[in-house]
Image (cartoon, rainbow, N blue to C red; front, side, top):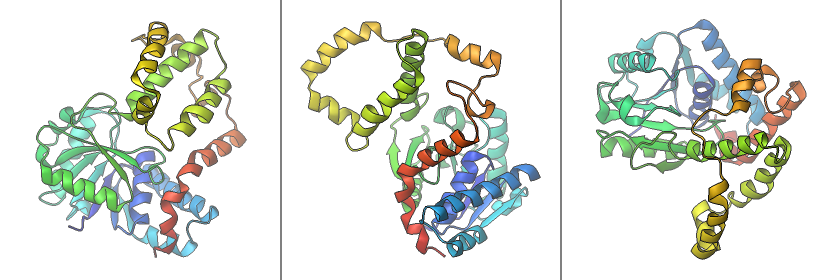
Length: 311
């Protein structure tokens, strides 16, 4: 079926999701409560298109046509007839419950709610929505309009038809869909990321290496290796015997803390909280932020090559 798409939320995820859907020819309604949030979303979507135009992957005509497919409003009645709504609001259960009630009130009768949550479980959220048969998690990754992976996670009541409709829409949007059999905290990718973050912060605290050298090791070994082959494919390539020997040597020395590490607590205390603060593990200024933004997007630009022709 042809889904009519809504997006509830005008933040980074919502604006990226809107860029993706209108870029693939879909009429899209975006709901945002504040005028400031709506305007930031409008600017973010336009900037995403400007980046694509600068990379030679879209045209001004395609941008104009795409923006005409997007309606941004604070009126939830605009969700009338929407059959698929991406929820991209704050990770607050009370807020999400209210949003789900609003979507159910104004959306189509069998509207699917797809939460973009990165930290809350599908079961927990499904219990809030009033119609868990038509609920699932569809967790994207930033930049949402460029990075193709989406983790789809059902709750216990999610129907096969709901899963099939979600997969069909996401594939139409050019996404690579990973389906979890059940919900676990962090799903797949964030669990991998937290394991790497924890070990990296531990190495920093033990003065084993600098942030730049840790990042260099990841970019030019881990990142390049697993860009073309799978993690578990590589495990099989190395072989169980050698991997067992490595594990016997390394496992006892790995960081296994279940507490937030001092380097993070101290940074929060001192206001060194990352890019937005101008300093975290690195120092950030306008030039380094622009360089980071370019490098963040570059590997994924090919995923939108076909947008040039969409008008």
